[in-house]
Amino acid sequence: MRERVQKFISEAGVASRRKAEEFIKSGQVLINGKKAKLGDKVDPEKDTVKVYGKVIKPAEQKIYLALNKPKGYVVSKKDPRHRKTVFDLLPEDLRSKVWNVGRLDFNTEGLLLLTNDGDLTQALAHPRYEHEKEYEITVSKKPTESQLEQLREGVEIATGPTYPAKVKTRGGKILMTIHEGKKRQIRRMLDAVGLDVRNLRRIRINKLALPNNLPVGEYLMVKKEEII
View 1 (cartoon, helix red, strand yellow):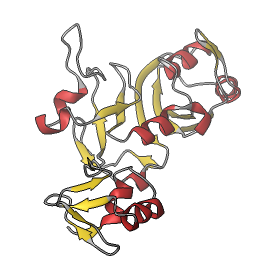
View 2: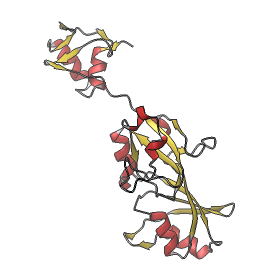
View 3: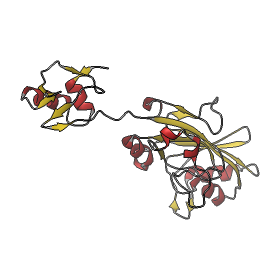
View 4: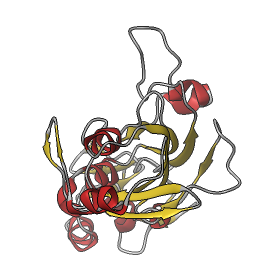
């Protein structure tokens, strides 16, 4: 697909579109060995574009996958104990292209994002952006209002105090929303108030909810604007 050369240069991360236009005007942009002019178009798959003598590669296509992680899978590229990893659930051509955004425990299931977008990864992983993660929790006994209120206020766990959480119940399960990502945080928070977790499933990351029709162990492509 052909596009204006200044747009191609900008999206490749070389410079802003306005700066790219300045490069073109000053004769520093070549298309297949010829000086580019404003308004020239290029096909990133066929044409060679140089700026100040350096070949410009097209911007990498961003990939966003929503995976419904099963229990019994490690969120890692490789596991020293040779357990199954979530990357085993992907076709080979995708495994090397994406990484996981955050983690889910071995025995936790639900929504896991996989991408090659570093900016998105950083935005979702850092607590200062306060992007929410929501979990559906089955516990061994009905929680008291006092226990739920403790979770709402934040509790002390091994890694320190947690921020207040949004907590409610639905159909005998606890729905809990946090914006941190401490190791085993949900399980430790529940343990701190005397609740034993029987099943833990992540059902939302920021704007993206786990699709109801996505089978466990399967994934689907999503758009960035569905996430953030």
